[in-house]
Length: 143
Image (cartoon, rainbow, N blue to C red; front, side):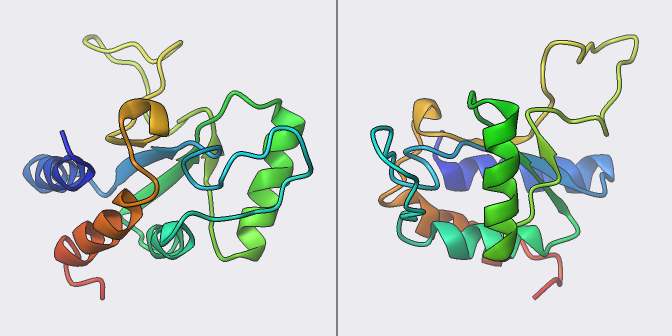
């Protein structure tokens, strides 16, 4: 499934179910930023990553969740630095807004509608622009 298809499906379900928002998890290395494991972080964004994340940050119908295996102290540093760039992640590796029910258990599984991660097949060199296009298409009168 392409990233555009993932957003289309998420926004369609949002409308059908009457949800207020969708949840988008986003990885950092080789997804938002070019990985630099051997040196200090340079915040070298992939093309359109910063802009796409800024758009999502200011939409009330999207909740951004930082999704990474980095230590929590490091992730807090990332979250603070992204905030300086106008990118607001609501949570880190959790979604406390969705609770368990008789048919679902999120004690160990994070609930989200769209996953943006190079390991999910996301191509950061070309897919961020597609994210922006999908966000513009599914605005619900936001822009």
